[in-house]
Image (cartoon, rainbow, N blue to C red; front, side):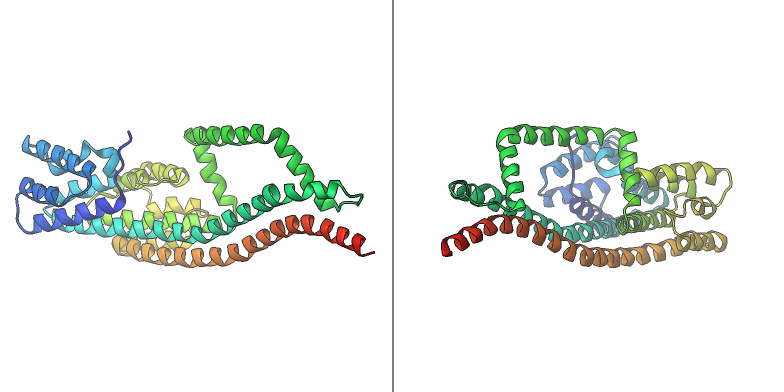
Length: 349
């Protein structure tokens, strides 16, 4: 349940396994060579179990199946098809390249969020410091003088009073709410609604869609290139989605394609999630027999679009966050400075 293998470890493992197989080493000997190079204790244990399973007569895919929660259907099926077709070394290279592209895509999305998060943390820290450290030391001075406090200062005093009286209760409520949301997000129906609601957020909806489309195109293309039949490939691809909206759409696509409907025809019914460019290219690929090539083209195209969307989103967030930071810090600063200015004016007169 708690086992987790970093994506980079899977990339290295598939690449190294491809090399030892291409070199002509027996599978067990190749796994032993790889094991001696490993630093991850978890992966060492997994390879030990794989060696034991293969020694009992299991295939490599079957030995990976015992660790399905770590490697997933996509990884295992690429290996299974490679073993059946005699192209295991080549399939492992394809697999490592796909995992690397998936890792790069995730890294780009995370990198785009770093700057906004830093700005947000800085805003909260500065505001909290001025409100709860600097301001309370000045309040006694205001109380000892007969001056009319500005509205902003009164609001800030009310916030301080509320935090003193109900601060721990509020903090406990926030923690309880976050824990409750964490558990609720594991409920499939709630998780689906959360994933669906993302598509109502301007700009973000397109970014989420393009990330999922890029993954869909590349994974489906790789499965088809490896010799997996299209119905089975759609099933495996749907299982790789974290987004439940896309997973649900593709799980239904499997039945429709099995009945004889074209994949493009089915996906065109969900134009919000699969744009006309994608469905058009898929349809051309299905009609001409070039579906794999078209899917890889789409994967590269939408990966580039993700880069553009991330760049645009970052450019949009920067001024908005700086404006919010300026307003919050400015509000607190004015609440502190205005009464001091009033006092100095009174002393001057």
